[in-house]
Length: 201
Length: 152
Image (cartoon, rainbow over all chains, first blue to last red):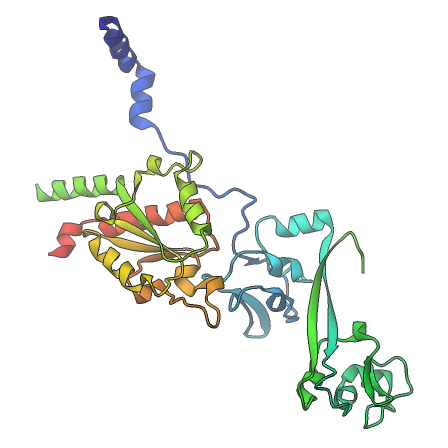
């Protein structure tokens, strides 16, 4: 017992112990380099394609705003969940956070987007408005009739034998003009984004 | 003499920050990040931050979650239980905007600043432990500095 007290006193009188006890510094607070923070602008030019806004899973987290002559995405803190999807979706690499762009380049991952045309046959009245209004259809068949019938197979959709047929929804550009002209609201365009790896377009 | 005493109080207060947290309906993501602050990796107590489960022992209130209707009056009561000087920090997106819970037809009432005065916010879904600790460390000493003089 007596010896252990002496041992402790000796220990406390050691210079290194006193120095550590009085002047020990706490480690600095640093974020690790792999931390994916809020997306920041890399300085590349935004083309206003709005891919970032369309892929964003949170309401009100990102908006592409006009700053004088140029467009630039703006992140709203308090809404953004820092998932990094806008960074991956951007074709111009306007945004970056953490190692997202680096990892994407290394793994060769990309997001591909296509559009699905869905028609509800119960409410569709086969008026052909969507066929006539579609700008892609106009390109493919300039002689499209006002009722939506066409002899051309290259159109996205057409009226054939009193029914609306969707042939090539892979040609759809997602403009949604058909949704606007449909009198019964029975045509719907869905945007489908798929993650890919190693595939080159 | 009073100046010296005040300086000593400031020095002590900046190294001894007492924190309590309240979850007003979050998904537990932020709770786990607050818990991670206590873990050996981040080790809150090396910065002089102590966590209590009793608001009467605390000076800093961490508000997590999106303020469900059941919490509206209870959050206010809890805020009144904290002795002066006190400060509230909103942790995560939920007390700011409601985040994923703030959809049509959901029973939430964000932001938390509607119910109690929020001095600072740490956005993120969830925020990193480093961000939480940084917010507490940067805010609390400035709020508590010269508290007695400010009150007069």
